Length: 257
Figure (cartoon, rainbow, N blue to C red):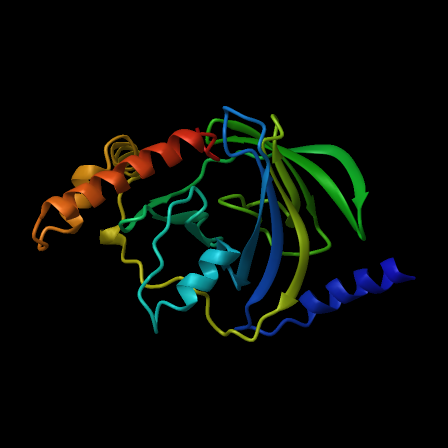
């Protein structure tokens, strides 16, 4: 009876959804951030969906971005400080990545080429179907349900005939699972203003990010161009640069590789 009621709840949630109302899906990510050890981490992500657009973002980043209007932006080290803005109407993705000193963004149209497989199973209250795709140097396995007519999922993944309930790579280093959903009183998505002319190509994004990770000091110095470079400030910037390089050496197992 409990399963039937939960199933009915989801069907009512989506069939009665009003236009202009954001729906939030909660995903738990379990991942292996380093190739050098077996450490496992977990994070909670939000997928906020409105009509044919969505925003996928880590819970903590959503909270820090929400304070942006009243406080200075929170800059921190991390491989999960990205925001993915999707337009399901034209299958485009804008990814905004916080690199400690600022945000760099790119736009792409992911070439996913989903392969739908006949295998089906029950996951919780949903019947799900298997699909596979290659993206970002990994082979991905998805389980989606047509019970929820939202053609979206974690990260850049979209385009299946239903919501992605589970997604993992073939090496079991990254796995997202849907944990829940609710209507949100927000009437707009937290996209911020992103003009096309401010976006770079994905190739340029990769090059800029690699340059920053390998040698962050020039970028740090440029970000403080108007500040007098005393010995104390230079020492602090050198310490920051070494901390950034160390962090990325220790967290080298990124989603895309």
